Length: 575
Image (cartoon, rainbow, N blue to C red):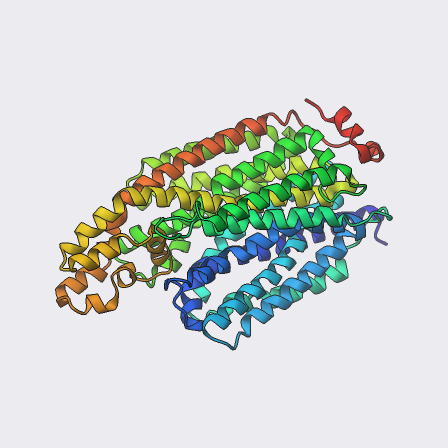
């Protein structure tokens, strides 16, 4: 007869495998659309680069991220109140159902685009339920001396899923764009049934109430800021970006006011959604701030690396624009390998030596890797580029797993769900913020030299003065999106009607593999160096913040009843 100890030993591995599957599936779908967008837009017969259609382009990418950022804290809180396993199981079912609905789009044009965006929103709801509760369920199942390893595997699966999605999207979308959603359905069905049959609920305290004012002010405040970021990188009037538009400024102001109100609401709430007293635990606050900073330094840079490969490097090395999405994902694999290698190892070692040396060291090495990437020419040698991607992946993996373990170990058992959700909010919201920051830095860099370079290049190849002048004053973000979508950017920048007036030789030059990459290389390099410098600074600040977490710390389980007012955290958090 199986002993209770043996049963517990087997159960924790069931929890690890199921939650890792759930988080991996959710994060793969965060990025799978990045590479598949060209095939999706061709499939639904819409040109996202026509003025007014950039809305669909941005929200297909960002809707999933915005929803998960807004909801993970609330769902973590609901897990603490009504059962983490119950909320997690619901997440698997919701995610699978809306993945199926995404595959059965029967419309075309803008109707299909709106359908996909709405279904992505609901798919994000399921993903938020999975992300909010997986770390808490793991922490409940594993003893203190093994949590780093378990959370490391789970965390690394989540982060590496963002990169694996790039390759998966590149492989499946050219066959049939619906496959990028359909592939989640059998996996989701299996995971849903497995979770319902095998995962066990840990008894929770009852009587807590949902903090409705806190949820509303937080959700609408965060949504306001994220929508403002989305529209801030789009052109407005004669400006290359929309940061000065009344709409964006109004959203930013409203979002900030609501988040300030949220802080006051939470301080007075009997059962707050965002447990502010947890920030009195040094290991939690330092780890969460480090999470935010690392995500800001990493999130938007993935877009820049993909554009670098798709828009410049791959075409210069003989790849057609249509083939660049898939190969960009393949050439990014060293980054994923670094995560997969360093994450579990550093998580395992952090169980013995604590989180601080690995998380801090990881951020310092990440800053160094960004410095080395900055030294590369725009048309680099892949033999130099790939080791730097691997180094960056190793550094980020070394940070992510121990940092997550340090955060979860610092939490009292009854607040692990909300604490996990808070940490995930920092990570997910920072990714959206990072995209806004990096695109802004890149557009500023492009705006300085690109118009003149574009004008001279077009005129020298026969484009009439007026058409070259018009093309040179198009928003730089349109050119970035064109390269990002696996199409010849010049076709959209100049227009087929103008190209038809040129000789075959001139047309061949303009829409060939080398004209646009050579044209944009110098301005893009200027913007890229600015972006790398920003990442270096943010990673170094994250390293300092991580070091301030103090030594190895586990929240004493016998003191959790004191935490309602935060007294225990003050007393027990070690400096």
